[in-house]
Each structure stands twice: as structure tokens, then as C-alpha cells.
Picture (cartoon, rainbow, N blue to C red):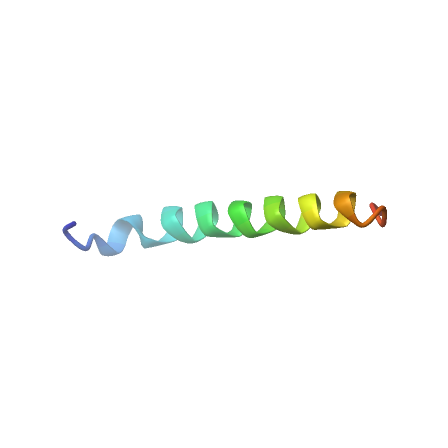
Length: 34
């Protein structure tokens, strides 16, 4: 994979979305959805 600096922000956004999704799933599974 060729590193593309201009795509780094898009990658970061995808990573944030993924982390948020994981956090949401863990909150739901623990019954602490707020």
C-alpha cells in the first residue's frame, strides 16, 4: 500500500468511526447506552 498523506485524514475519520462503533457496541452489550 502506497502511503498517501492526503488520504490520512480520511483514514483517521474511518478509524474514529470504527472506534465509535466499537464503543457503541460495548455500551449496548453492557446495557449502559447513554
